[in-house]
Length: 89
Image 1 (spheres, rainbow, N blue to C red):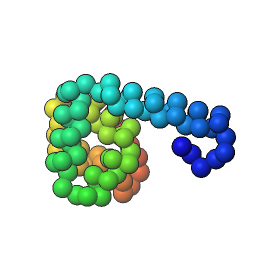
Image 2: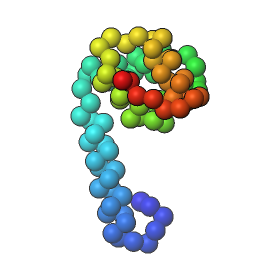
Image 3: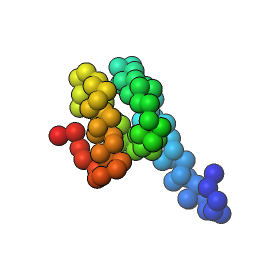
C-alpha cells in the first residue's frame, strides 16, 4: 500500500505491481539462466549493482547475445556505468 489516503492511487499501485510480477513470471528458463549467469559471474559489485538497478539493460544484454561473453558484458556494463549509456548495437 502506498502512503496516500487514496483508493484510486492504491488500485493503480497494485495493478502496476501485478503487471510487474507477471512480467518476471513469464521469463523463460534460458533467459533466467543467462541473467543469473551474468550477475553471478560479474565480480565487480558496482557492475552487478548497475545491472540489478537497470533491469532493461540487463535484459537487453540477454536478448542480444547468443553466447555470453564475459568480457563484452563487463565492458558494456562498465561503459554504461562510467561513461555514458550505450546499446548492444
